[in-house]
Image (cartoon, rainbow, N blue to C red; front, side):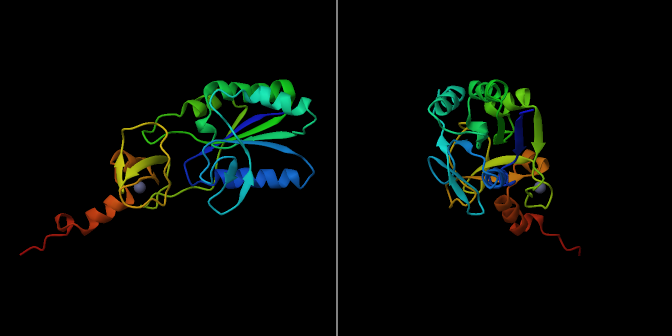
Length: 216
Ligand SMILES: [Zn+2]
């Protein structure tokens, strides 16, 4: 039975690497994939992983009907044996419904990869719809770690290393930002709640306020 599978996790948990691995394994068996992505770090029409692998993909537009796109592709003699949707958190809920229809009406497996929650720890609309519709949800086993060593379960947005909790849901940034720029960092829930990033923890450790006071 074809399935809609949602591979979820934090940033940096290896989602895109797994997407590329699935693509590799299936194309090695002679299968052809349709790969959708949106706002990949490598630029439009690319699916890339932090480990340096990259492949071409279809950049999803606002309002694009993914089911109709597949039907057009197939009716023009194109092949698609399965579908990969990376950065699925950026898809609209209606586009997730279209992916479910691809599974049910076209009989194709759809593998969606996405971050579950945003920097405020709220569900992305696309991820919420995937949780509602997926046949199966896989939480990725390559766990990202907080600076404290605990399992990182939350995504933080930073500006100059300081965690911020207000702003638009989608702002382009990367984990390798320079000072003053928007960046992202994965944290455990405890440090996400305390808004303590690696930079602010380092600053606090250097502050004389927290040095032990010698007893006289
Ligand atoms: Zn932590």
